[in-house]
Length: 342
Image 1 (cartoon, rainbow, N blue to C red):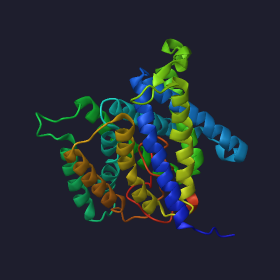
Image 2 (image 1 turned 90 degrees about the vertical axis):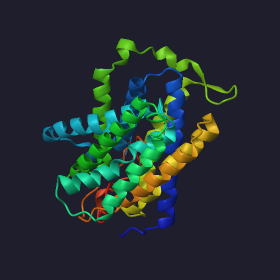
Image 3 (image 1 turned 135 degrees about the horizontal axis):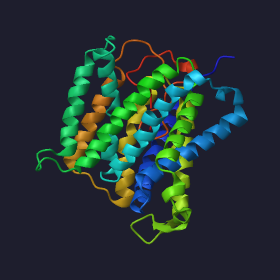
Image 4 (image 1 turned 90 degrees about the horizontal axis):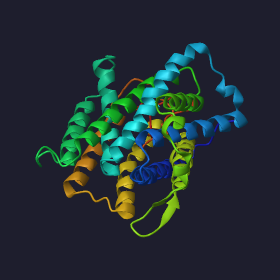
């Protein structure tokens, strides 16, 4: 029986996912400020999301988890670059930059994707991509306030944000290929498994992680409120990854991928407001203006591609990223898969 689309539900779930990803940026910042290294935080998020997604699919539709050996190398690269490194670099960025600004840098990924398919793949791209590029670069100049002695932002944070954008673009491009033959939800599950295994080797908890640290109480507001660190980590896994991921997927039953992606660009705005209200991360007028200019460029880049192509499943990172289409919704082209997050 054909599914009845209800756009209002699609808009609501997309905005809800963006809101959870935005709040997750501040929660992750608190965990980083409590002394959790980006490697551990990324490992816990990837591992927790992998376990949660595996358990959900095993209960609901275990057949979707079937895997062949031929898929393993692709999934390994996809998981390491597209998930593990994207999230790690995002955490490095928000540890040194305001959350909203870090997201603005990371979310330039759609512009890079459109340029890649135009210059490398030689696919037709609407001329608006050049306007999108100009807007994004101009906005980033304003965000960084480069006229202030070379810039008002931490150079390593800026570099991490831009590197996260490259990894996120890689995630989307590889996901575009992967979803041509595999269910997007199962694909994302296996990429999180690959990311979790990567961190288990690169930063094993047994070598340097004391589980007792999760019981330490950390400040969660400018007042005296404190919570155990494990509560923050649980939020990051459940409400910062798994839940917004499922909301993003659900939205695509009611909205085209491009529309969902455009709606999801509210995430940096939400993230900036949450960080301002919660931990008083204040942006200058130039940074706010620059962020809006960059978002305008992202919106143009989202619709620059003309070829109809499949789009990847959403990254439950970040902050990242916009929900991507399941196979039964891949009828509309987009410059990038509709939003995250990585």
